[in-house]
Image 1 (tube, rainbow, N blue to C red):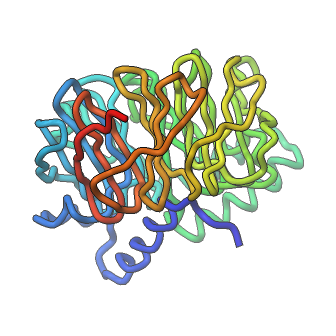
Image 2 (tube, rainbow, N blue to C red; image 1 turned 60 degrees about the vertical axis):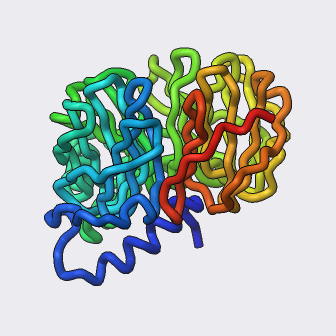
Image 3 (cartoon, rainbow, N blue to C red; image 1 turned 135 degrees about the horizontal axis):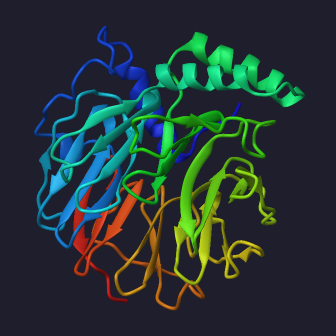
Length: 350
């Protein structure tokens, strides 16, 4: 049986219990709760020097205007579990999650609008395949797309990358890939535009590096966008375990995954070599500091740092212990997030 990443598994478990409610999470606004900062948080991002935004279970969205020292809950129009959030600038942000949800904000996270959900995404993928030229790949994917429509919006989107307020990609379970070029007003399915279309492995992470776009997923899957072919093409890294994310280290790109495994490329993704992460459990999160420090975190709550561009990572001691799904670095604090919510600790110096 194929599995989601640590973050995806936790969110999927929460989604199961939420499903017993009679109300559709796509129609039910997120409930306000004083406990939201202590519940599952899966992603943290920054807007400017002070404001942070975090997302998590049941449509919880948290805002901080003091670098994570305190949090307040924002209002969302749905209660689907959220997986990732990104802001392109101080005003324009996007978030993705379960039920095929994509949300957008144009006012710094104060208000959010649903731009896509699993129902619309499934119908879009099916219709585009029906209009595409005949091929063995098309026929195989048509059957899969039809099953997705019949099963409903049950597949999560797990990550996103927007290069501008208008253009971006979202990726998720079973090879879900959608692109927008107009800020989410319309979408195009890339279901049949990847070297993953025969396996339909889950896609866990998407990031840009040196002007190129990369995607990682199950079973050692790492792909790069071939802009000439308009297709994500597979790259061999020598590692066959699942990758859960990517870290753009500036001069290097790091892909990380199961049991502390990671690989690094210093030539734009052409060649890869094993990286000693100093972690043993599955790596679930990463961050880059303003001082170019590189941070990795695993599902057991351990964190390692590199101060030499990824040449060497060493584990750091933290004052709290909690399973981690996301980390964020400010000039003075390390923001930790996971199943126990979000906390800020002084930035380790050693």
